[in-house]
Amino acid sequence: MNRFFILLILVVGLLFIYKHLLNQSKAPTGWVGSFMMKLWNKVYLPMAKWSLSFLPTKQFHHILDIGVGNGATTYYLSQRFKLESILGIDISEKAIEQAKRLHSDQTITFERANIEKTNYPSNSFDLICAFQNHFHWNNLKGSFLEIRRILTDDGILLIGCEYSKVKYFLPELKELDVFAEYLDNVGLRLVQVERERDWVVYRVGKRVMKID
Image (cartoon, rainbow, N blue to C red; front, side):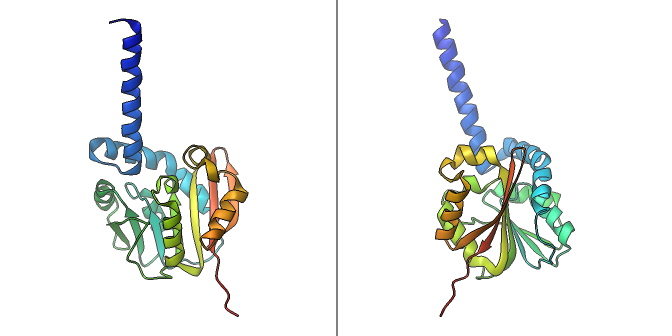
C-alpha cells in the first residue's frame, strides 16, 4: 500500500471521527456522549457563569435552560437564583438521563424537548438561557419565534457561546448589525453584547408590538 492510500485512509478516518463528534455535540448518545458532556460542562461552565454576570440585578421567577447537557448549568442557575422551580431541556435522551442522575433537586425539572416547538404556555419564562448550543439548532428562525412566544414581555434571552462557533456554524450572522436585524425580524431585539477572549454573550429582549 503506497503513501497516497495510507494518507487517504487517515483523512477519511479523521473526517469520520470529526463528524461523529459533531453529531455527539448536537445530540449526545452512549459512553462517548457521556464523556463529552462531562468535558463540555467542565470547560463551558465558566463561560456560562461569565455570561450570567451581565444580567441586570433583578429576581427571576421562571427560568428555562436550553440544551442542558448533563445539567451543570441548570444546577448553577438554581443555586444562584434560589428559585421555586427551574426547567432544563435537551433533545438528547442521554443528556436528560444524566442530568437527572447528577443533579437531582426538587427545584429542578429536566425533560426531553426541542426548543423549535414546545408545549409551554405563552409568556411562561422571564429568563431563557442557551449556552453553547444555539448554532446547532436545526431551525434557528423557528426556535427564536418559539422563544419569543414563551418569553415574558420584560423577559431576557441570554445566549452565551464561543464566538468561533458562531463564525463557523452561522457565518451569515457573525456581524452584530446583521444578527440584530435577524432578531428584529422575529420580534426580538439585541440589547447588549459583550466579548472576552473567544467568549461572546448576547442579551436579547422581546420586541413588544404596540397597538394604537
